[in-house]
Length: 205
Ligand code: NYM
Image (cartoon, rainbow, N blue to C red):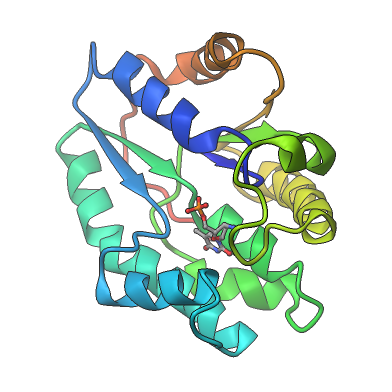
């Protein structure tokens, strides 16, 4: 599950998890995972309690996924459903919105992570997002940056369709009531309800 800040992503991910738990064993993983030593460094950076080079923080976000990659694979092999609240697509969209980092450079450290079968992108205009509560508390929560992040997500969507044809990319209108948005999300992931067979795919390979 991907989206701009304040797109309702965490609430919707939780609801989707509850929905799928009726029929599957579901593992929900949130990125960044702020509980690990790497995650604690990321958390301090996001709350502006530390300063880091743009490359260093990008690599920490990626390392935070790699330290969980084994768990994700084990869950998938056990036949369970894994839902990630943000993943490598956020990694690229947020970092590449900084003028110091190129899009291709940002993708590199996440190449060959376990690939998702579907990406749900909760789309919201930065103007609407800004009106929602809590906006502006953390680094990156600025309208201008969110606007660039949204454009890069669109580029990632196009590139993903070309390079990783097996990934379903669903851009969901995140405006409306919680239930309306949840219905759209559940419909988008319906094609996966029968389960996935075969090898675990690798991201951007
Ligand atoms: N973020 C998140 C990144 O910049 N790179 C990443 O790889 C990931 C996973 O962290 N503004 C940014 C997006 C958010 C911030 O995410 C924290 P959240 O979902 O608000 O905890």
